Image (cartoon, rainbow, N blue to C red; front, side, top):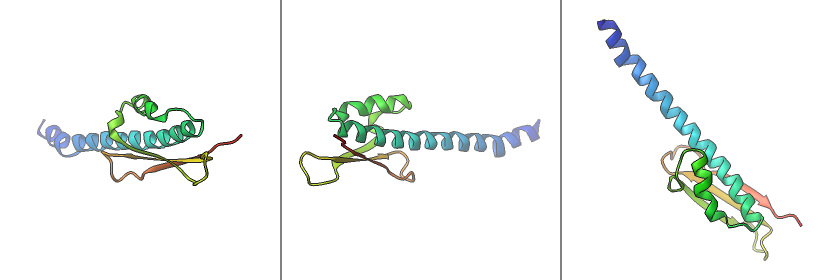
Length: 106
């Protein structure tokens, strides 16, 4: 019984917590990639991408406040023909910021 308690405390519980943390980080990374792609696409189509962030984040079980979102025009040409979206996860600073660029095609 003592060995079981010691093994659980020293090995099993830390491994479980590490696995949960890795799954949450993967969830945030996948969400940043999906949000960047979708927001750049919506901006290039002329849609209101600001309303989409909470909906898209909820698809991954997260909130819009979990992300830093920036959508900008790539060129100085008006109307803008290319948009880039940068999305970063606030809780996971070690995850690289996802970026996606979309071109407007006539």
